[in-house]
Length: 139
Length: 139
DNA sequence: CTAAATGCAAAATCTTTGCAGCCTC
DNA sequence: GAGGCTGCAAAGATTTTGCATTTAG
Image (tube, rainbow over all chains, first blue to last red; front, side):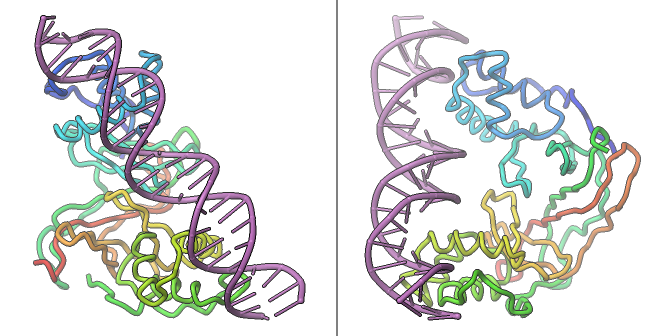
């Protein structure tokens, strides 16, 4: 198991709304270059480094746009806040460090989950796993 | 794997605040008798069946109280809303039906997760798993 | 130029808090 | 009775929406 600190893959440059704006480029880049899923607040804060006037409403709107276009997906962790990350990262899960509260992507899936119908009649199509513990930096 | 439709175990009757009120009894009962974790809204709606005048603020306050006393715990699923369930149900995970949007407890843990330090320096102390698919009723 | 996109601020939600009256203990 | 608890309504926090202005194409 390992984390991907940055460079989460260059997605085939897809459309982001109808116009290519500085805001949308910055927001997309912030999400793509993160080591793990980010909250709207994270995205806003990081985006303002590049674009100080960036409004929170634009972040919400762009996140929704990226979701609709399937370029990002929501990731919800027990911390309670919704985070977003790029799609196309392949099957992976998350590691939530209880010390620094950062969330990291894990490249391997340490679990074997049944797919298909089984005993009680529940049909499993997908699964989401989050691991908790201490990250290397905090250990 | 199977779901526990009701009767989620009778916890040793612990204190719920300093006084035993009808509201608190109803709220505790609603959570305890659910087949899976409930949202605050679910709790409120179900509690009003028994106690029509039940206020939403009381639900929030009682949920916080139960959390503080360790009688319930938050469960956060990708649907985004925070849900609550009794503690003391033992290690278990959740199944989220994509058709009816209900969440069920699963009694067995279908995964083997490493515990302890491993390759990249991440120390896993705990894990949370959610399965998605179709429940028996919706199949 | 034209219309999509932005930023601001108001509106809509969701959750918490202040308070007067009610109800356990 | 006394003080905790409740319901209501106001206050906070978070997310969405309306609108005039800016700006990509």
